[in-house]
Length: 262
Image: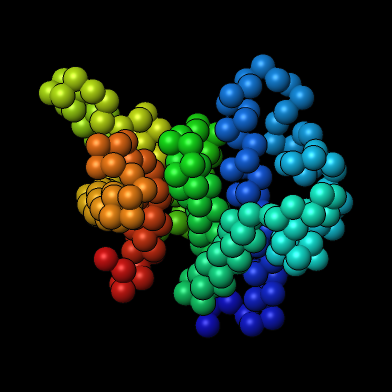
């Protein structure tokens, strides 16, 4: 076991806290993009409040997982049901963090893995809900990947990370223009370019073909399942970000030499 056993409660709390931050990002960033001139609304302000009646939320109800349990899945002020998504996101990031702690031999890699997982979870959920991959998430993902490579603690060198970032961006940028010229329609959003560039910084350029193949297969499965459940027409636009996020996360695990992936 790579990390000392007594550290596991802290790691679980770290992961759950990362999940709590993901919930904040998922709610606040789309509003910030819709209201770019509203200086009274940002990632910190206004303080946490009930989405229904706007009553302030006590600090202890913001404690990851525990707050949801204390509230018994309902708002404290108006007793309306809280979405399961909040606690599931926190529990998922806690579980992922514990799993990474069992696999990774370096505390730096563990911290990087938790950060990567949180940012990709935020991008995945934002793209699913809003068809949006905001710069406020893709840029930190890109620069953190490059900084990890610069530190020498990551799975790829700075040269491979830079090549991955440039190659990832150009690959989807070229595909975008080919589709636009051939079909006279946009095949994907610019956020997809930036997300693949960020994944290239984390994984190196060698992993990009596998990441793209995995993302395409995952997106195809999502389309077919959604169509079979009558949730989406095959002609509707489908977000590519979730497939990239999942495939990129697996690609990073492969890059740190976990051979049972791919």
